[in-house]
Length: 298
Image (cartoon, rainbow, N blue to C red):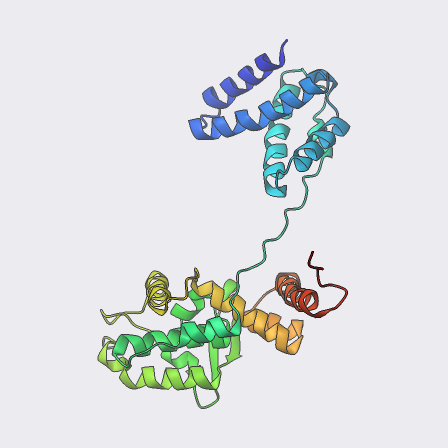
């Protein structure tokens, strides 16, 4: 049987029995066809396919510039195709089970430098919403909060006498985080006028113009408006302030465990991504300053 016939039978199986959408079918076809074209170039038949050939198939994709995530997706689709061929008695075993997908390169979080943060947080004006937004942005950066943690705060979670905030994070775990002086001043200014907006009985620390607890979507919208108004020219979302907090804390202290506690990460490996950011910063300084690192000008 020709390789195209194997693929056609498999696609009919996905369409008629698994009821996959046309978009998903197209994705499967593209990935499996890549394997079949590789086998043809290598003068290999489907029945002769083994784990070594699959590893070579993945290696070729890598050499051609395909990313780790795309290769992992392609191998997953191929593994399912080979499972189908085992069920059809074309193969006696699925060689894809012996082939591990390459680990996806972890994307480094986007951060701002200290000057960019200072420029963003320099909100001009003293109207109610500006005062509220200033308190929100200062707290996000001061304490490295997740967006959900910020909007979930109640007034009683904030202790400005002790300069701390009690946060309920992922897994319903509570942690107490310091609040910086600038953020504390911004929060005091907001609390002084909060009653102008808040509905009676509303416990949320930050409230909307309707008087109810502010939503995460509203915070994102307001931040986008401020970024545009400040003319920074960079794309910023609330989590960028958390990433910037973590990166700046690690650059200054070098204490990975402390940053882990402040961020509320369950695993130190999650926090370690910021060591890569710190290294990039150091590497940039090295390249710019070290005599042996500087590129010679022709």
